[in-house]
Amino acid sequence: MKGKILVVCYSYSGKTRRIAEMIEKLTGGRLSRIYPRQPYPSDFEQLLSQVKKENETGALPALLPVTESADKYDIVFAGSPNWCGTIAPPLAAWLKENDMAGKTLLPFFSHCGGEDKGMEQAVRNFCPAAKAGSSLYVLENGRQDLQDLVQKWLEETLPEE
Ligand SMILES: Cc1cc2nc3c(=O)[nH]c(=O)nc-3n(C[C@H](O)[C@H](O)[C@H](O)COP(=O)(O)O)c2cc1C
Image 1 (cartoon, rainbow, N blue to C red):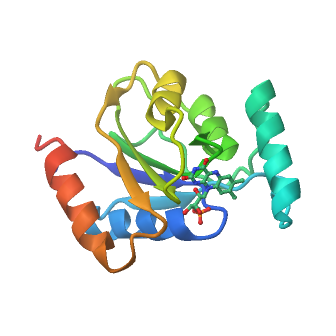
Image 2 (cartoon, helix red, strand yellow):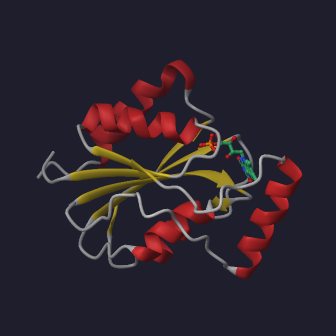
């Protein structure tokens, strides 16, 4: 695999983070997490209502300026939980802030088996000029299958040169 690799992810409860850490381990890329300036509520009903509102209005959260920018990288893995069928707003905000033109963009998602209303498309819409690779979908944190799942996806997806 050729090129500098960045792995970014937003993870609310740690499952997407586990997938990101596996990608980091298997690719030797740099892992950098995304944090909203204002953490999301810990109460599920409040969280759900905020996420639904953000999805309806397209409002994106301000982010803490701690996440690596995509500038120096050629291949970007971008991860998010499935939130109400789409990507979590913090990942959307990061994608919007970063110029991905010409970079290879590989999305990965954690979900609980519910509806996907087009998570991959949501990523593509923010980064139309990126080179698209196929996405990885993992149920929760992948449990004991995670390494195999990620390994297989990397073999199928990563550009050889
Ligand atoms: C507000 C909210 C909305 C969710 N909506 C969906 C959904 O529509 N479909 C689905 O499969 N999972 C949904 N989930 C479950 C998460 O995608 C799943 O638990 C994921 O593994 C969490 O990843 P994380 O630990 O990185 O945050 C939702 C979770 C939350 C908190």
